Length: 498
Image 1 (cartoon, one colour):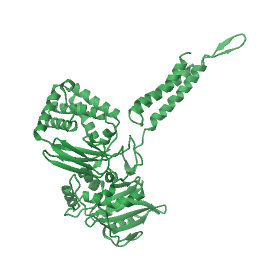
Image 2 (cartoon, one colour):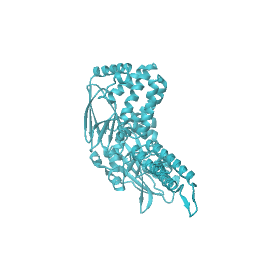
Image 3 (cartoon, rainbow, N blue to C red):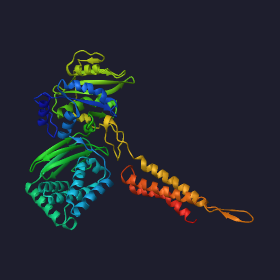
């Protein structure tokens, strides 16, 4: 029965938001957090989730998060790579293509291009990546053609044409074969005609189509060749969400994006729901966000499990929502100290889904209040991230973030500077004489220490350069080289006179 519900939901879900509910009954449940997901959230929601599935609710990543990403939008940052990493991989693949190692080129470049296209935030923060992607796309198309995969090669060249409408594949740069394949794709596109994509943003937003900036702070109306496009929006330097839109020849499509709402949505391999910057924002926007989320998936009922605190003690608040009538019909509150029993969590799920007794928690079955469905309520909504990061981490299990190496180049710089000071001291004092009236004896006991400190500083300098080049920092590589070499230059310069 649940499979039938999901099939009906997916069949009726469109890429653009539809407010019309499905004829079949579809129920979903999601989580709600402020700032970040608590470490014990998965353990506490697991019994609730399992019990709700007995009432036909879809709430796992596979039944809610993945369909949402597939049919509505997905995070604009699936993985992080620095421009230096991407340039190196793209160049290796291009060299394999130039050398005639086409299988190797495809093995290197196809995953790289796919990864970047699923993480447009990387390109938004590092625009120079587009040049490396252009070369990689050309090499991929020709390599596929040479391997006898003509259809895949033509598709990649079509993708390049849609992504780089203002650039061309030239014989002088990429060779006659690449130029001919590009010309064929261009003729095919010109024969099909054009379509128009109108993107409406709720707030001043950067709009990217296939990683190409088309609007810096507002709506966009773009004439495009037919095909499937990736539309990504971003406010400031904070990552947004990625939409997929298919545009047909001689057609017009409109995509309305509510950036304030997108900033609240969280979909990942670990959980699905909402992240709010503070409790006041959650109290104001959670009902409207839940209603919109339910309608996007074609759900008629929804349950939100919110982790919060009252009087300094953690509690779990559940709310049951009816998307058809736009009302919250039932709420419940469960203290999380002491640790609730599994049976209590299951009873909470039963109550939210169907009403009934409330053992171990408080419930309100008369909470029939209306939800403001106007999407303008999301205008000005802030994301849960307190500040933007140029090297953001992707959420891991239990809301944890991968361990960052951002500290490593700075520690290396500090070590290099210390080594420089030590080397300077040793070089200055090495070879100084101890003189009396009869003789002058020269001591060179610091020679090994001086050169050892210099070698250590050079090693730490190299480590710092590697760290900065791989994007473990927020500064540029030039700054890294300048800062890390300054100390050693001083030590070598002063020591040279000895």
